Amino acid sequence: MRHFAGIRTLAIVAVSSVAAREHSPAAARQGAPVLLSVPAAPVPVAAAERVVLVYELHIANVGTRPLRLDRLEVRDADRADAAPVATYGRAEIERDAKLIAPRGAPPPKGLTPGVRAVVYLWLAFDSSATLPRR
Image 1 (tube, rainbow, N blue to C red):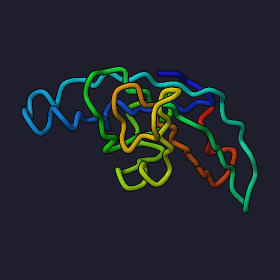
Image 2: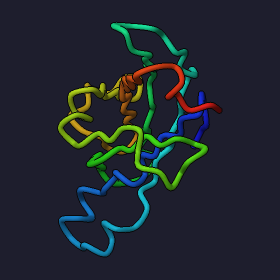
Image 3: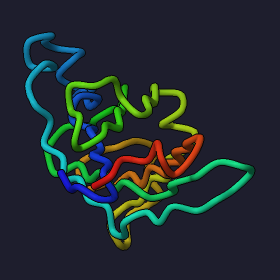
């Protein structure tokens, strides 16, 4: 997990193994083998009388089973126990994500092994005073 501009993105909470869920609920609750990265830190931008952070979260399936992103939470790195800054459900993730297959593979239809999801996050704050500090 990477910290940037005071925001920590938690995606592991949201990942479930589609194949494991079909066969064993206990297996579906185990941690999913994913890699998370944020290629560039967001820069606060004033837009429509708000302060906006826009960035990409890359989620790579490095396991052997298809995965599904059910929920994604964005939290303040300095206040991890506080309510999430933003929460995305499965429909929002599917709307805001692009699936990328390994080179030479056909376009992916899901987060199968070797596929990367790029989730585009847009966080709007009332003012720069409400932005996380770190």
